[in-house]
Length: 400
Ligand code: PMT
Image 1 (cartoon, rainbow, N blue to C red):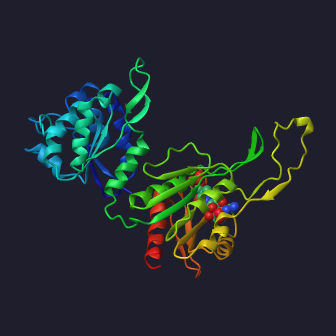
Image 2: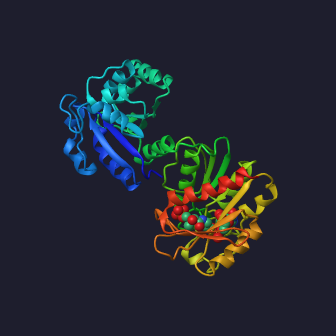
Protein backbone atom coordinates (compact mmCIF):
# COMPACT_ATOMS: atom_id res chain seq x y z
CA UNK A 1 0.00 0.00 0.00
CA UNK A 2 2.82 2.45 0.80
CA UNK A 3 5.34 1.41 -1.85
CA UNK A 4 7.42 4.40 -2.99
CA UNK A 5 5.78 6.75 -0.48
CA UNK A 6 7.94 9.15 1.54
CA UNK A 7 6.77 9.72 5.10
CA UNK A 8 8.32 12.22 7.49
CA UNK A 9 7.46 11.73 11.17
CA UNK A 10 7.77 14.69 13.53
CA UNK A 11 8.24 13.29 17.03
CA UNK A 12 7.30 15.55 19.96
CA UNK A 13 8.13 15.30 23.66
CA UNK A 14 5.65 12.85 25.13
CA UNK A 15 5.95 9.41 26.73
CA UNK A 16 4.30 7.86 23.63
CA UNK A 17 7.45 8.81 21.64
CA UNK A 18 8.81 5.30 22.23
CA UNK A 19 5.87 3.84 20.29
CA UNK A 20 7.01 5.67 17.16
CA UNK A 21 9.96 3.26 16.75
CA UNK A 22 7.56 0.40 16.00
CA UNK A 23 5.50 2.70 13.75
CA UNK A 24 8.65 3.46 11.72
CA UNK A 25 9.30 -0.27 11.36
CA UNK A 26 5.71 -0.99 10.30
CA UNK A 27 5.76 1.75 7.65
CA UNK A 28 9.06 0.35 6.35
CA UNK A 29 7.47 -3.12 6.21
CA UNK A 30 4.81 -1.48 4.02
CA UNK A 31 7.69 -0.33 1.74
CA UNK A 32 7.53 3.37 2.65
CA UNK A 33 10.71 5.45 3.00
CA UNK A 34 10.63 6.99 6.46
CA UNK A 35 12.55 9.89 7.97
CA UNK A 36 12.13 11.46 11.39
CA UNK A 37 12.61 14.89 12.92
CA UNK A 38 12.47 15.46 16.68
CA UNK A 39 11.63 18.36 18.97
CA UNK A 40 14.22 18.99 21.73
CA UNK A 41 11.53 17.74 24.17
CA UNK A 42 11.29 14.42 22.33
CA UNK A 43 14.99 13.75 23.00
CA UNK A 44 14.15 13.68 26.74
CA UNK A 45 12.11 10.54 26.02
CA UNK A 46 14.01 8.90 23.19
CA UNK A 47 17.38 9.32 21.55
CA UNK A 48 17.69 10.56 17.93
CA UNK A 49 20.22 7.72 17.55
CA UNK A 50 17.37 5.21 17.89
CA UNK A 51 15.56 6.77 14.92
CA UNK A 52 18.82 7.16 12.97
CA UNK A 53 19.48 3.44 13.44
CA UNK A 54 15.96 2.54 12.32
CA UNK A 55 15.78 4.84 9.29
CA UNK A 56 19.46 4.85 8.25
CA UNK A 57 19.47 8.66 7.97
CA UNK A 58 20.04 11.43 10.55
CA UNK A 59 17.12 12.30 12.83
CA UNK A 60 17.65 16.08 13.09
CA UNK A 61 16.69 18.06 16.18
CA UNK A 62 18.51 21.36 16.06
CA UNK A 63 17.09 24.14 13.87
CA UNK A 64 20.48 25.84 13.79
CA UNK A 65 22.78 22.85 13.23
CA UNK A 66 21.66 21.39 9.93
CA UNK A 67 22.51 17.71 9.29
CA UNK A 68 21.41 17.19 5.75
CA UNK A 69 20.97 20.60 4.20
CA UNK A 70 21.73 24.26 4.79
CA UNK A 71 18.06 25.13 5.22
CA UNK A 72 16.97 21.93 6.86
CA UNK A 73 13.32 22.73 7.62
CA UNK A 74 12.71 23.65 3.98
CA UNK A 75 14.32 20.44 2.76
CA UNK A 76 12.26 18.46 5.29
CA UNK A 77 9.11 20.36 4.33
CA UNK A 78 9.41 19.56 0.62
CA UNK A 79 10.71 15.96 0.87
CA UNK A 80 7.73 13.88 2.06
CA UNK A 81 4.43 12.83 0.54
CA UNK A 82 3.00 13.04 4.06
CA UNK A 83 4.16 14.74 7.26
CA UNK A 84 2.91 12.83 10.31
CA UNK A 85 3.26 14.46 13.73
CA UNK A 86 3.21 11.74 16.39
CA UNK A 87 2.93 11.98 19.28
CA UNK A 88 1.69 15.58 18.97
CA UNK A 89 1.84 17.26 22.37
CA UNK A 90 -0.41 20.10 23.59
CA UNK A 91 2.50 22.54 23.24
CA UNK A 92 3.30 21.54 19.65
CA UNK A 93 -0.39 21.67 18.70
CA UNK A 94 -0.58 25.18 20.20
CA UNK A 95 2.47 26.19 18.19
CA UNK A 96 1.02 24.73 14.96
CA UNK A 97 -2.23 26.62 15.55
CA UNK A 98 -0.52 29.94 16.19
CA UNK A 99 2.27 29.66 13.61
CA UNK A 100 5.19 29.47 16.01
CA UNK A 101 8.24 27.95 14.33
CA UNK A 102 10.79 27.66 17.12
CA UNK A 103 12.13 24.15 16.45
CA UNK A 104 12.60 21.85 13.47
CA UNK A 105 9.26 20.06 13.89
CA UNK A 106 7.22 23.27 14.12
CA UNK A 107 9.27 25.12 11.46
CA UNK A 108 8.80 22.19 9.05
CA UNK A 109 5.06 22.23 9.80
CA UNK A 110 4.80 25.93 9.02
CA UNK A 111 6.85 25.62 5.83
CA UNK A 112 5.31 22.49 4.33
CA UNK A 113 2.71 22.47 1.58
CA UNK A 114 2.40 18.69 1.81
CA UNK A 115 -0.41 16.79 3.49
CA UNK A 116 -0.14 16.73 7.30
CA UNK A 117 -1.57 14.23 9.78
CA UNK A 118 -1.49 15.18 13.47
CA UNK A 119 -1.78 12.36 16.00
CA UNK A 120 -2.10 13.79 19.52
CA UNK A 121 -1.19 11.97 22.74
CA UNK A 122 -1.23 13.64 26.12
CA UNK A 123 -2.68 13.62 29.63
CA UNK A 124 -6.51 13.70 29.70
CA UNK A 125 -6.69 17.11 31.40
CA UNK A 126 -4.35 18.63 28.80
CA UNK A 127 -6.40 17.15 25.93
CA UNK A 128 -9.72 18.30 27.39
CA UNK A 129 -8.45 21.76 28.28
CA UNK A 130 -10.39 24.40 26.29
CA UNK A 131 -7.10 25.86 25.05
CA UNK A 132 -6.08 22.56 23.41
CA UNK A 133 -9.58 21.96 22.07
CA UNK A 134 -9.62 25.48 20.56
CA UNK A 135 -6.25 24.88 18.90
CA UNK A 136 -7.40 21.52 17.52
CA UNK A 137 -10.60 22.97 16.07
CA UNK A 138 -8.61 25.86 14.55
CA UNK A 139 -6.31 23.38 12.81
CA UNK A 140 -9.27 21.31 11.60
CA UNK A 141 -10.92 24.45 10.22
CA UNK A 142 -7.73 24.89 8.19
CA UNK A 143 -8.33 21.37 6.79
CA UNK A 144 -5.47 19.81 8.73
CA UNK A 145 -6.30 16.29 9.88
CA UNK A 146 -6.13 15.80 13.63
CA UNK A 147 -6.85 12.24 14.76
CA UNK A 148 -8.87 11.74 17.98
CA UNK A 149 -6.73 10.26 20.76
CA UNK A 150 -7.94 7.02 22.30
CA UNK A 151 -9.48 6.20 25.65
CA UNK A 152 -7.51 3.81 27.82
CA UNK A 153 -4.87 3.38 30.51
CA UNK A 154 -2.71 6.51 30.74
CA UNK A 155 1.05 6.63 31.32
CA UNK A 156 0.78 7.68 34.95
CA UNK A 157 -0.59 4.91 37.17
CA UNK A 158 -2.31 7.60 39.27
CA UNK A 159 -4.38 8.78 36.31
CA UNK A 160 -6.00 5.45 35.53
CA UNK A 161 -8.03 5.47 32.34
CA UNK A 162 -8.77 8.54 30.27
CA UNK A 163 -8.83 10.07 26.80
CA UNK A 164 -5.43 11.03 25.45
CA UNK A 165 -3.65 7.82 24.48
CA UNK A 166 -1.84 7.54 21.18
CA UNK A 167 -4.12 5.44 18.94
CA UNK A 168 -2.94 1.88 18.37
CA UNK A 169 -0.57 1.36 15.49
CA UNK A 170 -3.07 -0.21 13.02
CA UNK A 171 -5.32 2.83 13.46
CA UNK A 172 -2.41 5.20 12.73
CA UNK A 173 -1.41 3.14 9.68
CA UNK A 174 -5.04 3.17 8.56
CA UNK A 175 -5.11 6.99 8.70
CA UNK A 176 -1.85 7.08 6.74
CA UNK A 177 -3.26 4.80 4.02
CA UNK A 178 -6.26 7.03 3.60
CA UNK A 179 -4.12 10.14 3.33
CA UNK A 180 -1.77 8.63 0.77
CA UNK A 181 -4.30 6.91 -1.47
CA UNK A 182 -4.62 9.79 -3.90
CA UNK A 183 -7.54 8.79 -6.08
CA UNK A 184 -10.83 8.11 -4.32
CA UNK A 185 -11.98 5.73 -7.05
CA UNK A 186 -14.79 4.28 -4.94
CA UNK A 187 -16.11 7.61 -3.59
CA UNK A 188 -19.83 7.29 -2.95
CA UNK A 189 -19.87 3.54 -3.66
CA UNK A 190 -21.46 1.32 -0.98
CA UNK A 191 -19.32 -1.71 -0.20
CA UNK A 192 -20.48 -4.51 2.12
CA UNK A 193 -17.87 -7.00 3.30
CA UNK A 194 -18.32 -10.13 5.40
CA UNK A 195 -15.28 -11.18 7.42
CA UNK A 196 -14.05 -13.73 9.92
CA UNK A 197 -15.63 -16.87 11.29
CA UNK A 198 -19.11 -17.55 12.58
CA UNK A 199 -19.89 -19.47 15.78
CA UNK A 200 -22.72 -21.95 16.11
CA UNK A 201 -23.54 -22.80 19.71
CA UNK A 202 -23.82 -26.42 20.87
CA UNK A 203 -24.47 -25.46 24.50
CA UNK A 204 -23.60 -22.40 26.67
CA UNK A 205 -19.87 -23.25 26.64
CA UNK A 206 -19.21 -24.99 23.30
CA UNK A 207 -19.56 -24.05 19.66
CA UNK A 208 -18.69 -25.04 16.09
CA UNK A 209 -16.42 -22.56 14.33
CA UNK A 210 -13.28 -22.29 12.20
CA UNK A 211 -9.92 -20.56 12.21
CA UNK A 212 -10.82 -17.41 10.25
CA UNK A 213 -9.32 -14.40 12.02
CA UNK A 214 -11.03 -11.72 9.93
CA UNK A 215 -7.71 -10.40 8.57
CA UNK A 216 -8.65 -10.81 4.88
CA UNK A 217 -12.01 -9.07 5.26
CA UNK A 218 -10.58 -6.31 7.44
CA UNK A 219 -7.83 -5.68 4.85
CA UNK A 220 -10.53 -5.32 2.18
CA UNK A 221 -12.37 -2.80 4.38
CA UNK A 222 -9.14 -0.88 4.94
CA UNK A 223 -8.40 -0.58 1.22
CA UNK A 224 -12.01 0.19 0.27
CA UNK A 225 -11.99 2.98 2.86
CA UNK A 226 -8.74 4.38 1.42
CA UNK A 227 -10.45 4.35 -2.00
CA UNK A 228 -13.27 6.46 -0.56
CA UNK A 229 -16.08 3.85 -0.35
CA UNK A 230 -18.87 3.78 2.25
CA UNK A 231 -18.20 0.49 3.97
CA UNK A 232 -20.24 -1.86 6.08
CA UNK A 233 -18.04 -4.54 7.60
CA UNK A 234 -20.05 -7.45 8.98
CA UNK A 235 -17.79 -9.67 11.03
CA UNK A 236 -17.88 -12.66 13.29
CA UNK A 237 -15.94 -12.97 16.59
CA UNK A 238 -12.41 -11.58 16.21
CA UNK A 239 -9.71 -9.93 18.28
CA UNK A 240 -8.95 -7.44 15.48
CA UNK A 241 -9.55 -3.74 16.02
CA UNK A 242 -12.05 -2.41 13.49
CA UNK A 243 -10.83 0.15 10.97
CA UNK A 244 -11.87 3.75 11.68
CA UNK A 245 -14.85 5.41 9.99
CA UNK A 246 -16.34 2.13 8.84
CA UNK A 247 -19.86 0.96 9.70
CA UNK A 248 -19.22 -2.12 11.84
CA UNK A 249 -21.76 -4.86 12.48
CA UNK A 250 -20.50 -7.55 14.87
CA UNK A 251 -22.37 -10.84 14.68
CA UNK A 252 -21.88 -14.35 15.98
CA UNK A 253 -23.84 -16.88 13.93
CA UNK A 254 -24.22 -17.48 10.19
CA UNK A 255 -27.90 -16.61 10.48
CA UNK A 256 -27.06 -13.26 12.09
CA UNK A 257 -24.45 -12.63 9.39
CA UNK A 258 -27.03 -13.41 6.71
CA UNK A 259 -29.65 -11.04 8.19
CA UNK A 260 -27.09 -8.24 8.68
CA UNK A 261 -25.79 -8.64 5.12
CA UNK A 262 -29.33 -8.59 3.74
CA UNK A 263 -30.13 -5.45 5.78
CA UNK A 264 -26.95 -3.80 4.52
CA UNK A 265 -27.17 -5.02 0.94
CA UNK A 266 -25.12 -2.53 -1.10
CA UNK A 267 -27.61 -1.50 -3.78
CA UNK A 268 -25.59 -0.19 -6.68
CA UNK A 269 -22.42 -1.20 -4.92
CA UNK A 270 -20.06 -4.07 -4.17
CA UNK A 271 -20.65 -7.14 -1.99
CA UNK A 272 -17.62 -9.20 -0.94
CA UNK A 273 -17.94 -12.47 0.99
CA UNK A 274 -14.59 -12.96 2.71
CA UNK A 275 -16.10 -14.64 5.77
CA UNK A 276 -15.71 -18.33 6.46
CA UNK A 277 -19.36 -18.96 7.24
CA UNK A 278 -20.37 -22.18 9.01
CA UNK A 279 -22.42 -24.19 6.55
CA UNK A 280 -24.17 -26.04 9.39
CA UNK A 281 -25.38 -25.43 12.94
CA UNK A 282 -26.53 -27.82 15.66
CA UNK A 283 -30.19 -28.65 15.23
CA UNK A 284 -30.82 -27.97 18.92
CA UNK A 285 -28.84 -25.74 21.28
CA UNK A 286 -28.75 -27.21 24.76
CA UNK A 287 -29.74 -24.62 27.39
CA UNK A 288 -27.45 -26.22 29.94
CA UNK A 289 -23.88 -27.43 29.59
CA UNK A 290 -24.01 -30.96 28.21
CA UNK A 291 -22.49 -33.36 30.74
CA UNK A 292 -19.97 -35.90 29.50
CA UNK A 293 -21.99 -38.80 30.82
CA UNK A 294 -25.18 -37.59 29.00
CA UNK A 295 -23.55 -36.58 25.74
CA UNK A 296 -24.57 -38.24 22.50
CA UNK A 297 -21.70 -39.13 20.21
CA UNK A 298 -23.46 -37.49 17.24
CA UNK A 299 -24.66 -33.88 17.05
CA UNK A 300 -27.51 -33.52 14.55
CA UNK A 301 -26.91 -30.51 12.29
CA UNK A 302 -29.05 -28.35 10.04
CA UNK A 303 -27.97 -26.19 7.14
CA UNK A 304 -27.30 -22.46 7.51
CA UNK A 305 -28.36 -19.96 4.85
CA UNK A 306 -25.78 -19.47 2.12
CA UNK A 307 -25.42 -15.70 2.21
CA UNK A 308 -24.05 -15.14 -1.30
CA UNK A 309 -26.50 -17.61 -2.81
CA UNK A 310 -29.51 -15.98 -1.11
CA UNK A 311 -28.45 -12.46 -2.07
CA UNK A 312 -28.02 -13.40 -5.72
CA UNK A 313 -31.74 -12.62 -6.02
CA UNK A 314 -31.31 -9.00 -4.90
CA UNK A 315 -28.61 -8.37 -7.42
CA UNK A 316 -29.30 -5.79 -10.11
CA UNK A 317 -26.68 -3.07 -10.38
CA UNK A 318 -24.14 -4.59 -7.98
CA UNK A 319 -20.86 -6.46 -8.14
CA UNK A 320 -20.73 -9.75 -6.19
CA UNK A 321 -17.38 -11.26 -5.22
CA UNK A 322 -16.82 -14.50 -3.34
CA UNK A 323 -13.90 -16.42 -1.92
CA UNK A 324 -13.31 -20.14 -2.31
CA UNK A 325 -11.30 -21.93 0.34
CA UNK A 326 -10.23 -25.18 -1.28
CA UNK A 327 -7.56 -27.76 -0.55
CA UNK A 328 -7.93 -29.71 -3.84
CA UNK A 329 -9.48 -29.36 -7.32
CA UNK A 330 -9.67 -25.70 -6.48
CA UNK A 331 -10.52 -24.28 -9.91
CA UNK A 332 -13.27 -26.82 -10.61
CA UNK A 333 -14.92 -26.22 -7.22
CA UNK A 334 -14.50 -22.45 -7.51
CA UNK A 335 -16.09 -22.45 -10.98
CA UNK A 336 -19.15 -24.21 -9.54
CA UNK A 337 -19.39 -21.57 -6.81
CA UNK A 338 -19.21 -18.73 -9.37
CA UNK A 339 -22.18 -20.22 -11.19
CA UNK A 340 -24.31 -21.20 -8.19
CA UNK A 341 -23.73 -17.96 -6.26
CA UNK A 342 -23.88 -15.67 -9.30
CA UNK A 343 -20.48 -14.04 -8.81
CA UNK A 344 -18.52 -11.58 -10.96
CA UNK A 345 -15.36 -13.33 -9.83
CA UNK A 346 -14.08 -15.55 -7.07
CA UNK A 347 -10.83 -15.42 -5.11
CA UNK A 348 -9.46 -18.92 -4.67
CA UNK A 349 -7.11 -19.64 -1.78
CA UNK A 350 -5.71 -22.87 -0.44
CA UNK A 351 -5.01 -23.05 3.32
CA UNK A 352 -2.51 -25.87 2.83
CA UNK A 353 -0.20 -23.57 0.82
CA UNK A 354 2.51 -21.82 2.85
CA UNK A 355 1.51 -18.26 3.79
CA UNK A 356 -2.07 -18.66 2.52
CA UNK A 357 -5.50 -18.87 4.12
CA UNK A 358 -6.39 -18.51 7.79
CA UNK A 359 -4.89 -16.11 10.32
CA UNK A 360 -1.62 -15.23 8.53
CA UNK A 361 -0.93 -11.72 7.21
CA UNK A 362 -0.27 -12.98 3.69
CA UNK A 363 -2.27 -14.88 1.10
CA UNK A 364 -1.69 -16.59 -2.21
CA UNK A 365 -4.69 -16.48 -4.49
CA UNK A 366 -5.99 -17.12 -7.97
CA UNK A 367 -8.78 -14.91 -9.25
CA UNK A 368 -11.22 -16.83 -11.43
CA UNK A 369 -13.72 -15.11 -13.75
CA UNK A 370 -16.95 -16.61 -15.13
CA UNK A 371 -15.40 -16.93 -18.63
CA UNK A 372 -12.67 -19.16 -17.18
CA UNK A 373 -9.91 -16.51 -17.13
CA UNK A 374 -7.52 -17.07 -14.22
CA UNK A 375 -5.23 -14.44 -12.72
CA UNK A 376 -2.58 -16.31 -10.74
CA UNK A 377 -1.19 -13.99 -8.07
CA UNK A 378 2.06 -14.50 -6.14
CA UNK A 379 2.25 -14.68 -2.33
CA UNK A 380 1.50 -11.20 -1.07
CA UNK A 381 0.23 -9.37 2.02
CA UNK A 382 -3.53 -9.55 2.53
CA UNK A 383 -3.64 -5.77 2.22
CA UNK A 384 -2.00 -6.05 -1.22
CA UNK A 385 -4.40 -8.78 -2.30
CA UNK A 386 -7.23 -6.50 -1.16
CA UNK A 387 -5.90 -3.82 -3.55
CA UNK A 388 -5.89 -6.35 -6.44
CA UNK A 389 -9.45 -7.44 -5.64
CA UNK A 390 -10.86 -3.95 -5.25
CA UNK A 391 -9.22 -2.63 -8.41
CA UNK A 392 -10.92 -5.43 -10.38
CA UNK A 393 -14.24 -4.83 -8.58
CA UNK A 394 -13.97 -1.12 -9.31
CA UNK A 395 -13.61 -1.68 -13.08
CA UNK A 396 -16.63 -4.01 -13.16
CA UNK A 397 -18.65 -1.55 -11.06
CA UNK A 398 -17.75 1.37 -13.34
CA UNK A 399 -19.04 -0.61 -16.35
CA UNK A 400 -22.37 -1.67 -14.83
O1 PMT B 1 -9.99 -14.36 8.07
P1 PMT B 1 -8.60 -14.83 7.72
O2 PMT B 1 -7.92 -15.53 8.87
O3 PMT B 1 -7.77 -13.71 7.13
O4 PMT B 1 -8.74 -15.95 6.58
C1 PMT B 1 -9.18 -15.59 5.30
C2 PMT B 1 -10.05 -16.69 4.68
C3 PMT B 1 -9.22 -17.92 4.44
C4 PMT B 1 -11.23 -17.03 5.59
C5 PMT B 1 -10.59 -16.09 3.32
O5 PMT B 1 -9.51 -15.82 2.48
C6 PMT B 1 -11.56 -17.05 2.65
O6 PMT B 1 -11.19 -17.94 1.89
N1 PMT B 1 -12.87 -16.85 2.92
C7 PMT B 1 -13.97 -17.75 2.43
C8 PMT B 1 -13.97 -19.02 3.23
C9 PMT B 1 -15.11 -19.92 2.86
O7 PMT B 1 -15.99 -20.09 3.64
O8 PMT B 1 -15.06 -20.41 1.63
P2 PMT B 1 -16.20 -21.37 1.00
O9 PMT B 1 -15.54 -21.90 -0.20
O10 PMT B 1 -16.74 -22.32 2.02
O11 PMT B 1 -17.38 -20.36 0.63
C10 PMT B 1 -17.52 -19.78 -0.66
C11 PMT B 1 -18.07 -18.38 -0.57
O12 PMT B 1 -19.42 -18.41 -0.09
C12 PMT B 1 -17.32 -17.47 0.37
O13 PMT B 1 -17.27 -16.19 -0.23
C13 PMT B 1 -18.18 -17.46 1.64
O14 PMT B 1 -18.08 -16.21 2.34
C14 PMT B 1 -19.57 -17.62 1.06
N2 PMT B 1 -20.50 -18.35 1.94
C15 PMT B 1 -20.22 -19.61 2.38
C16 PMT B 1 -21.11 -20.27 3.19
C17 PMT B 1 -22.32 -19.63 3.55
N3 PMT B 1 -23.20 -20.24 4.33
N4 PMT B 1 -22.58 -18.40 3.11
C18 PMT B 1 -21.69 -17.75 2.29
O15 PMT B 1 -21.93 -16.61 1.89
